[in-house]
Length: 290
View 1: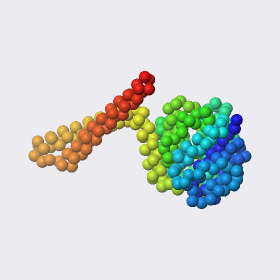
View 2: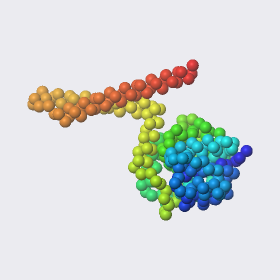
View 3: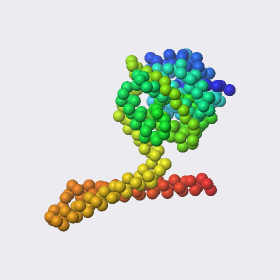
View 4: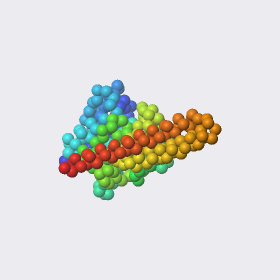
């Protein structure tokens, strides 16, 4: 049985892939690189160094790369699968530490989270804190791509999302299934590195959307129904004010009337969506039980 398989998603990382592969080989039995549609020599370099290379004809995204990597890694019947970025943001020398902690704590996932005072830019650190809080767990760094997984759980957490939001999707699935997740602070490197090709605003929007989507699907009555009720109450209050004002001075407050209509219609749509999703979930649940 192969003990440790290290997976490296990569897109146009010819400047750093060699060092990451060479360093990771010291602590891994197999190295797999997903060349996610690179237009440079990323895949060629990795292959020359002995890594197994999966090639995507076009750039599909981080989540798609992880899906290909996890699927390929399972072919080697590993005990542990490690993921690490190809841009030197993570130091491969910490792979043994993640593997050790995963075993010592009998955990399912070990995450290398950003250490206090490392090179992580302030805006990234704040964004990670916000995302982590939104997920509603004790995980401090939901965006770290440096992780060790117990191979036996991989099939249940393979992401469907193709973008960077896959990192949150994986953790959401793991939390839903009650898997044990631990973290260890590790210094991240950013200075002098080209660590991202994605617009940070788009990146942030995708992560927030994924978190909210998961929450809404889990508890539609809470995350859609309650806001819907609030909207309707506010709409009724503003509507009463509009009617009262019209009776008193015979003048319609057009702006407030429009806001009233938006609140009432929006609230109604939220409540209907909540009921629809809740009913669908219960139907699917009953169908499975049968």
